[in-house]
Structures are given as C-alpha cells and as structure tokens.
Image (cartoon, rainbow, N blue to C red):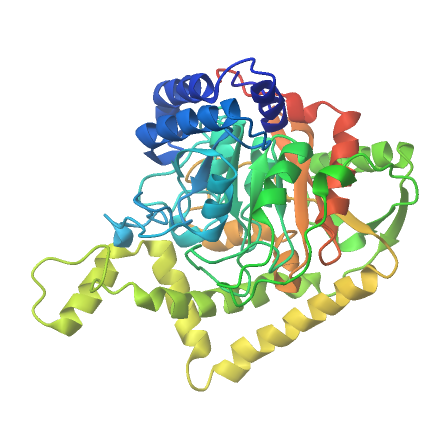
Amino acid sequence: MHHMTLAEIARALADKQFSSAELTQNLLTRIEQLDPQLNSFITVTADLALEQAKAADTRRAAGESSPLLGAPIAHKDLFCTQGVLTSCGSKILTGFKAPYNATVVEKLTSAGTVILGKLNMDEFAMGSANESSHYGPVKNPWDLTRVPGGSSGGSAAAVAARLLPAATGTDTGGSIRQPAALTNLTGIKPTYGRVSRWGMIAYASSLDQGGPMARTAEDCALLLQTMAGFDAKDSTSVDQPVDDYLASLSQPLSGVRIGLPKEYFGAGLDARIGEKILAVVEALKKLGASVKDISLPNMQHAIPAYYVIAPAEASSNLSRFDGVRFGYRCENPSNLEDLYKRSREEGFGAEVKRRIMVGTYALSAGYYDAYYLKAQKIRRLIKNDFVAAFKEVDVILGPTTPNLAWKLGEKNADPVSAYLEDIYTITANLAGIPGLSMPAGFVDGLPVGVQLLGNYFQEGRLLNVAHQYQQVSDWHKQAPSGF
C-alpha cells in the first residue's frame, strides 16, 4: 500500500480494496520503524489519525465518495493544527498547541484527509537544507549523509521514503520546489494568493505560499484542488474561481510554447544537471511543444533583493515571539526587558537570529532607502521580465537547483553558498507567479529536478505539462533503496 500514489489510494479506497484504517495503521508502522533514520516528523499523531481514518471509513460506508476521503497526509509544522504541537521547528514555540486550524488544514480535514502528524522543517522556514531545525536535521532518503533541501525538507523526505503519499509544504523562495528536486518529487508553489495563508505562521508575508508535495503531478492536482480558493480571513487571498486542475492534466501539449532563459544555463549550473534538463526539453518537443530561447535579464539581482526583503519581513513577523503570551520563556527573568531578551536569545536559532538582524538593519533609519526600497524596485523589474516573457511563451523551463543535494553540514560555515542554491526558484516568489518542480532523472544516484514557471493563475498549465511528461517517463516512479 505504501508504494501507491495518492490518486491510486483514492481509487483503491473507492473500490474498497482496503479501508482507510488499514492503510493508516500500515503507514504509522512504517513511520515508527523508518523515520528514526530520517527525522522527518516532529510530531506523530497516531491516535488522531486512527480516529479520523475510522470516521472516513464510516462516511464512505454511508455513501460519501470524496477522492481525498480517508487519504493519509501530513502537514509541514508551520500550519496551525488544533490541539497539536505547532513548532515551526523552533525552540521558541515549545509547548505551543494551536487553538485553531489553518485554512489549509481545515479544508483538507473537511475533505476527509487523515493527519499522520507534523513534519520537520528549517526553523521558521529559514533555510535551504532543513538543518536549522531545533529538532535536528532531516536526512535525504536517497543518501542519508545528504540534505533533503529546505525548508520543507521533512515533507520531502517523508513522501520520498514512502512514509506517506503526499504532504503540505510552503514556499518563500523555493522551499517546496528545491526539496522536491533533491528528493525526486513533484511539488508546486501556486500563484501568490491562490492558497490561503491564514493559520500559516509567517516568515515573509509577501512571499510565503502553501502548496502540495507528492510523487506525481496528478497527486499535486488532487490536493491543490482542495487547498486553493478564496479565504475572507486572509487579506492577500485572491477572489478568483479555482480551475479544474484534474481536467487539465490530459490536454495535449501541441501548441504549448516553452521558453528557455539563457540565464538558467550559464555559469554556476552543474553541466550534468543541464544535460538532464535538455533531455526533458526534447521529450516535451516530441509531445508537441515548441521551444524558444528567452531572457530574464534581472535574474542576477534576485538573490540580493530576496535576502533584503525576506529578512525585513521576518524581523517584523517574528517580533511577536517574546516569551510573554505563548511558547518558550526564559527562567527567572529579572525584569520585563530581561524576559524579552533572554527568551528570544535562547529561543531562536542562529539562522533565524541572522535574518532578524539583517532585516532590522535594512529597515532602520538611514538604510531603508538604500536597501529595502531598492530591493523592492528590483522586485518590480523581475516581475516585468516575467510579464514580457509570458507574452512570447506559455511556460518557462529550466533547472530547479544548480547542484545536487550536498552533504549534511557542508555549507554550515558558509550560509551564502546555501542561499545561492535558490537562484532559480526565488524569482517566482518575488514576482508572485506559480512554479513547479518535477523529477528529471539522476546524476550519481541523486535526483535532479526540472522547474516549470507559469503566468499568474496558470497552475493548471504547469500540472498539465508535468503530467504529460510523466506519462512518457518513469523517473517519478523510482524509490530510494531501503524504503
């Protein structure tokens, strides 16, 4: 059962090949046996999962037929989940049990999904390797000495190791797509505003977006269909009808125009990854797509712009964690100022402190215009590049990451080198467009991902291209040995 995709599970449950309770127990047993190698879960909600599975079986017996009814998933541990520890991978949220469900959690729970637990992540989603978590690093199931990517590394590792068929993730600068690429998964970051951020603990509010991670485009479409939609509780949610993503999967690719940015294939890209990406291009051409060279001239400025804007927003968002109302509090504070200082000093990890300090500096008097305002102007230029490109092409294609998964600890002494691993993914967040990563093959036994970028609210087109490619390839079917 654990080798089945989410769509296959949905069909099997509908055909009564097994019950949700049987499937859930099977996966809980696998998590207990195998997750100690990976550290992908922060919390396993076994009792809740079995209770929800039995309720789903009862609903099916009564005639309900929702495709996600009884399907087991897990949530990245920054989605508030009522009565369950929600930690953001940080010591400062020690003991915090959310009093409500995030909209994404609520929608998926109402659809009948079974929550197996909360997944490990870089602290407050700040990282590209899932090594900054207070609960320890997550390991890549393809090579336990390597990182799974971040910040949604727990989600990626758990799905790749067949501990569950799908999971939620969030993407601020590539945190769904980059770990999907490094673990051989499909993951999609929707258009900004397509999926509600209410109850999703913020890192950088103008960049964060939730999305699904699974083994296939079909599975991502199945989840996104439920996750997407307007939410009055989220002021950035867009009131626009949700497309039928599943229906769009089967459309032929004839007439689809694919753009290849010259900036994606220059210095910095591992040549072996480049070969895999070009092989995907050839396969898509055989399926009827046409290819055109394009340029995104301001991409070179994306990393510095992002690492001003995101930390600036983080410094504001994380000011609420002060040891007073919830979470970690230092022992025996001498006064209120001491309480604030020591609670934050002891509660936040090194990477989070680094970004708070950078963000506070960028927003300070005398530096706002020099850094933050200039970064926002660059952001507009990057968006304009995409607007111009999508007048010529329907989809932009390139590598998801410039390198393969690196060794655990390899980049800890040089955080900037880790930041550069997001060079191809950050632009989609700055512009607010949707992006998807899908499996493109292997180099030295390690997965390679190809990235597809689309125009605003064109998630269906990205899922369509990925699904059609997955009909003529089998990279997404490969599983890591030992799992």
